[in-house]
Image (cartoon, rainbow over all chains, first blue to last red; front, side):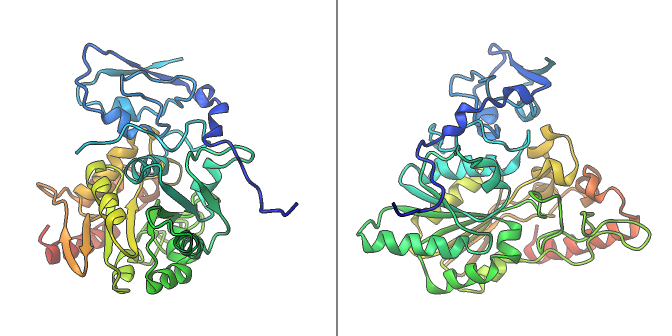
Amino acid sequence: MTSIGATVKEPGSSKHYKTGSWRTFKPILDKDKCIDCENCILFCPEGCINKDYDIDYDYCKGCGICAEECPVKAIKMERE
Amino acid sequence: MEIPEEEFLAPGHRACAGCGATIGVRLALKMLGENTVAVSATGCLEVITTPYPETAWKIPWIHVAFENAAAVASGVERALKSQGKDDVNVVAFAGDGGTADIGLQALSGAMERGHNIIYICYDNEAYMNTGVQRSGATPYGASTTTSPYGKESFGEDKPKKNIPMIMAAHGVPYVATASISYPEDFMKKVKKAKETDGPAYIHLHQPCTTGWGYDPSKTIELGRLAVETGSWILYEIVDGEFKVTYRPMQRKPVNVYLESQKRFKHLADEEKERIQNYVDQICAELKI
């Protein structure tokens, strides 16, 4: 067999590694306050907020960018 | 602007909390779409997205070495072309080290040969992956582990190497600067780069919580301050035509940007003034 270097055949397989355990502060979104501006979705380094604004805590590292960039302060960071 | 929902970078990657590079890559891939091959130089992005045997990429991705992202992208483009696959986007992502220093000759060659590739430099202004060593793109006054401040030094004593202008000097059809803090501006530029026939270069400014020394939640805020103070200017050069794409309503003093980061905390008033004068001079030329 010819070696073609190290190949990984499953696209996006990093999802098997849950980075949620890195978190000390957890973002909690108050959907009643949310104005659907998409800032948190766009700026999330993990891409773990979906279009319905559900935060995937399996991967959220708790950086707090979403809370910081929310124009109506609908996201609060709470200690785990 | 309609922003596609689909994500091509999976979570579970090992970037620091608050990483700016992954934000930039996510946004770029949204615009490039599924029909894309990505190439990375060695650097933060390569290390955090591909902890073997895992990968965060949902599109074909290849890494060879530090210095040759542009050469590998050239080869991929030519191979696809010879197979008649002209509709595939080929994008290279490299850091400032892999672009301004180690990969410069490969990049210059690829630009000169006129390959139909998109090259995105994610610039966090030092070698962050190996422990914050200075690069050609480190700005004046910044303290890094190889340009530390102390009795003998005030930090980096050279100005930031102007890579986008070096790329423009190659006469390529599309050159732009961007910031992760202005996603619409950045994504529009990625779209233009995608539609460009020939080489396109985008220099993406991207704050780094670990290397710059600020709270992870402030990544976007820092990028915004860089632009609002005139320290980073958003422009594009289409077929040689230069245009500033964003002008701050009222330019903030550079101090606001410098004082919010550990790497500039040591600067004396004299050096801050020198930086302000330098920024003023550039902004005066561009009427910002």
